[in-house]
Image (cartoon, rainbow, N blue to C red):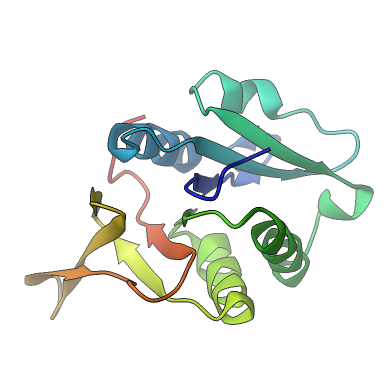
Length: 165
């Protein structure tokens, strides 16, 4: 299973495929990992099969949760499953897409885990063991660097098409 220094990327799927933003996040996670394992989190229905689409982008591991209730799960259900996984596996960082689904699921997970969440990021990097999230402020005129030094996992949502896949 995963190690506590892992970077998780929550895979987003819709209309029978993994959404491109997931591949973008996996690619960025691999660029900044510096030895940390990159783990894709895949929630799917019991008759779905999206694992190969994710594997093609090179995560070190895929944690796949298959259950009939996940085929068309509510955001609350997805958040509950991700929260339970995070409590069990203790990842260092969790990356979500800043899409309607990610903007709904990520804060639910963040609240349940009592950690921080930086939304709508445009860049990510690590300074030592601290994830630095760069996000716009003041109408996108100022870039802020935000960290979460006291709590884990460090959580961010990233705007789609910010990084290349």
